Each structure stands twice: as C-alpha cells, then as structure tokens.
Length: 424
Image 1 (spheres, one colour):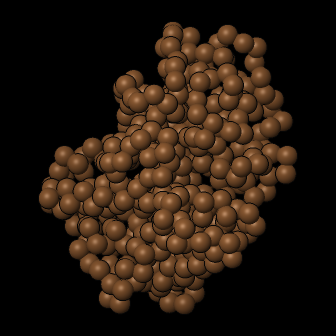
Image 2 (cartoon, rainbow, N blue to C red):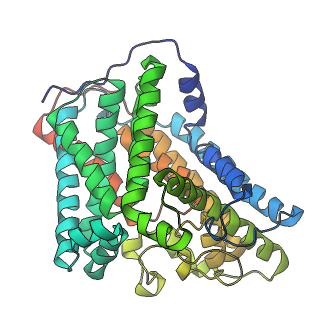
Image 3 (cartoon, helix red, strand yellow):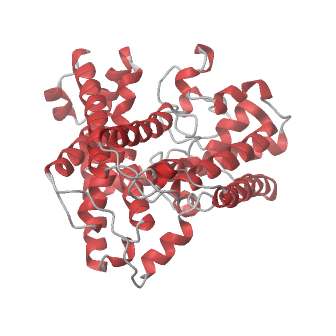
C-alpha cells in the first residue's frame, strides 16, 4: 500500500468549503438537519408514512422550550470550544508523532474483527441470507445479532471510521489502495447489519478530515457532485434492500426513490414531531423525571444497570414514556435527545445537557487541533453533536468504542514506528 499522506496546501476556498467551515463546530453542526427536519415535518405525506397521523401544533410555549433547549446546547458548546483552544497541546498531536499508515491498518483490523464477529454471530443465530434477500428484510439481521450480544461486536462501528478515511483518500486525495477497498467493503458490511446511519457517519468523518487538512477547498465541484450522487445511490440501494418489503406491504410503494424519500421524511421529521409533543407536555403538565437518572447520560450504555437498558435494543420510542401521549409510530427509533432526557430528568435535563455539551465540546475541539489522525476523535465527538436533533449519542457504547479505537490505533502506531517528536 502506498504511504498515507496528509497534505496541507494553501488554496482559495470555494463556497462549499466556506459553509462547511462555519457549520463544522459543536455549537452549530446539528442545526442544518434540525432545519431540514422541521421543513419535512411540515410537508404533506401519505397517511402514516411520515410516522404520525396528526401533526403537533406549534405554540409559543412549546416553541420557547425548544429554543431554550437548543440555545443551551449552542452556548455551552461555544464555551467549551473556546476553552479547548486555550489549552496546550500534547506532543502526540503533532504531525509526525506516529505513522498514519500503521494507524490506518490498526483501525482496519479492529473494524474487521467487529464486522466479521457480528456477521458470524448473526448467522449462527439462524438467519438465512437467501430468505433475507427474497423478503428484503435485512433489518432481521440486526435483531438476530442482539439475541446473544457481545460488546466486542460494537467494534463494527469502527468501520465508519476506516470507511470515512477511505472516502477521504478516494474523493479528496484521489488515492486508492487495497486497504481503502477493504475499508469500504467493511463499511457496507457493517451498514447491512447495523444501520444506514453508518454511511452518514463515514461521510461526516471524511468531510471532517477534508476540512481539517484543507482538502475540501481543493476539490472540483464535479467531484463533489459525483460523490454526493454516489452517496445517494448507496442510500437508495440500502433502503431498498433493508425496507422494500415493509414499504410495499404497508404503503404499496414500489419505487426505490419514493421509498427513500419517505424513509428520510420519517427519519428527520419524527424527532420534530416528538419534540413538539413533549415540549407541549412540559409546558402543560407537572415536571417528571429525577436527577437520580443522570447515570444514563454520564456513563456508556454498557455500564448501565439492567433496569436502565431498553428491552428492544434499538433505543426506539417503543421503550419511551411518551408513546401514548404523542402521536408517533412506535417502530421509529429517532426520538430526539430532548424527549429522552426530559423523560428521565425533567427540567434537570437542561443543566445536564449544558454540562455534557461543554465537556464534549472541550474534548472534541481539543483533539480537533491535532495535526494527525487523532483529529478523528474530534470528528467522532462532532458527530455526537450532529446527532442531538435525534438522539443523545454521547453515552452510546459505539461512541466510546470509536474513541477508544482511535486511541488504540494511535498508541499502536506510536509504539511500532516511533518517530522523533517535537513539542507543538
């Protein structure tokens, strides 16, 4: 494999690069999808296809609560960013602190272990690939995996890191190697057994690396267009493979593009529906929840006591308290960080969210300053902020595993091929 390089060349920024540089920060990264979600929430849809039958009404009360919620996140994250910029850097964050090729290979090995282990476990539980292809219900693979789950399978989420790095090399550096091809295959295999969100993760990680190493502004518009088109085709294909049977049986939809639009509308619009409904309840009903549930948001899910773990393994609304008080499909798993935390903590959710935003913005922005691939930690944390419009990701086991995987890869690369280090 050719040596991995991280070039930094001055160039005139294009419009995409300017917009990305503005949005790519903890305090703002979730805003575009929040806006898109609100727009699609307001759009008409087939009966039941949007994930709800009756749209929640917008009032001054619920709108004020939600503005205060997202304003708290923005303010706390901005303070964390400023603090991170003032802290001294570790030597390991310098450009030549470790060999990026060894780092890449180590991360790919971790992803291979996780993806292969997850697939073997799912197939051992009796899943038939032939039947899944016939019925187009690949969601059953994930259900089978959780029948006898091992935390080692969470390493499959590392595939989005190596897949993102492979996309970065392919699209922005215009390089490709056998390891890049393996990484992209691991990403697709992990997506098939987990969720299409892994593709979004990989794109965000690739975009983050392009922003960090000034590669985005050097890419031609047609290259970005081709990459976006390729991404869209992948999303349509995975929607058809995983959910075509459901859309055909429940809504009579045969067109893969129409299926994908309905899927996106459900995916980004449902959190707005749930948030509006819970904000209405917060304004009209006595406060609920207790500060004692804070452990759910301050420790990884694999350390949670059994009583805090959802029974359906999806984190979906089927396990949530507001299911019969807000009109929303119980099969949806996009439920908004606000409704999760308010249900557990009541109005204590605001200071807890403020602290989490401050802490994570500090950590993410600090590692984002790395001149090497340790900046991937910043990308992972930023992805956590990106998810806040739909879920609280900071306590997810996959979030912790991805950060640990980056640290393991960096440590391995430092030990196997040490290079002279200079203080920043």
